[in-house]
Length: 204
Image (cartoon, rainbow, N blue to C red; front, side, top):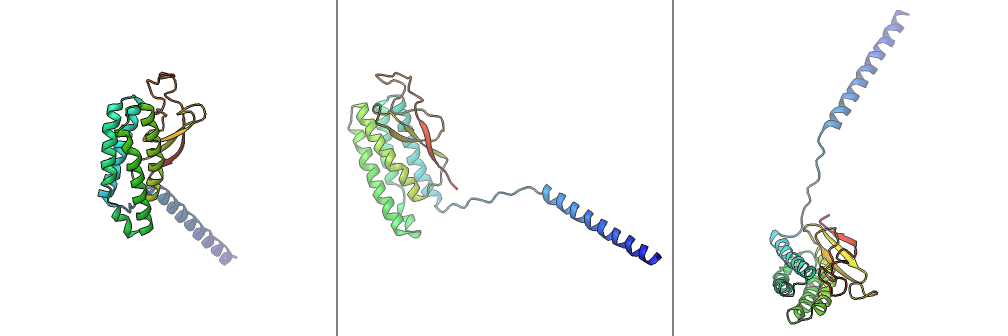
């Protein structure tokens, strides 16, 4: 009988020790700081800097459209063309030559659609060209695997009339409409925030 009690006592001690060990281990595991995985970028710093320069010029151009400042629109359209032209697309060859070819074609379209802005004097026509630049820039950034700050793909359902929508990119989720702007001849500033976010681009 004493032997049976001794065995039971020993089992209880072993189980108790095991329970305490598991609990302590769980607490220490839970208290360990969570380390986020580092995001490894596939493009060089120069490549991303050049893309960033192009985006910055585009955003400045967008802001100038909001203000209906045609001189500033043209200034930044010129900067945008130069910045896009300086992106070292040859870097993309190491990943996939088809991506490099597609990106080069898209750069050609970007420059072709931005160039008329430099010649136009009518702000509405300039906005039409900006719309085409935006439609080219959005897929271009997807093609190259954009690695910059978060961008929002935004839409105005009545940019050029009740049934004529247009899109643009912004670095802010708040809608500030470059097509209807602050000084629209018909709406004044009442439609400045007309639109919605459709998508976003960011480093995953």
